Image 1 (tube, protein in one colour):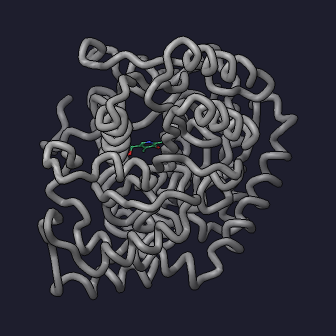
Image 2: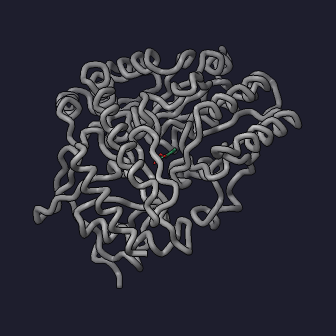
Length: 418
Ligand SMILES: *Cc1c(COP(=O)(O)O)cnc(C)c1O
């Protein structure tokens, strides 16, 4: 059956899912259909919403900016909201990240990071062109992002277009040394330009956690061999792991850091790639050929920047960290209760994120159970979208413990679906 709508949806097999749930409104942690059915947004609308839907100060900032300055070429021109966002980000980011390059999606911020890293070595006249990436990584769906991401069913058809990277294991708890040894071996053989990592948690790869100590060690090895360290904080940024940025927990300062999803509170697209002065300096020259050749039409769109500026003020003025701490504790408590549940393996939480693997025969992203689970959760008024047999909850920070209780009750019930 073909769908009535001309829309081709992302990560959707239309032959198996002909009808989309139509949402009319959102508020806080909730979505509402046209006919008034309420759905709890357990994955923050695909990992983007932080404080909650329609958080008033951010909505107000968007309204105030609209009608004042809508869009502006960002080469040769600048504007107040972008300046405010950039200054504030440099203040709160790990030390040394002194320059802010705007773009409009997480994927683009990664492409920019890779181009900055490669450009850095070209302009310094040093021949380093390879990038190190982790197994199970996800960095977005454009060609460069897919190249550094894990290979698999997601990108098999495009394999011939993807560039080769040095792939090392991710530092799985208890097996960290394999990752360190592999990284060090690559560096010794022929030092690469950069290593790119999702700090502390590989999200789309299955909510795979690793420790701050392991992140610190990867960073230490990178520094020892002059390898640029790229932190993809597109998902982890803005509180998801319990701290503003995941890198803080390891006490490291990356050379390049990518932010997107939660930058505007998750309400409007905007991304940044932050870089050290050294990387900026390598492109700084009277020679036009050395400028950084990248732009998107909507780079630093003023309305998006106004939303981001408002979000950064929310972080400064509201008790966001306390709210997050409450959610972190609530998640940990509920995960602890699932530890001995026969239906689940590896119930785990990291900051505001919780995940558990349903024991099934056909594990993996295409596990038949995923669609069945999603439909079951939706029938309970819950938006959860398992990664194969991995069920996870990534809630907006306004979520209450009693809302979480409803989610966990449904998850326990779901174990019987296997
Ligand atoms: C979502 C995500 C991206 C891609 O961001 P988009 O805005 O969807 O392009 C990159 N890296 C990580 C870790 C992500 O979770």
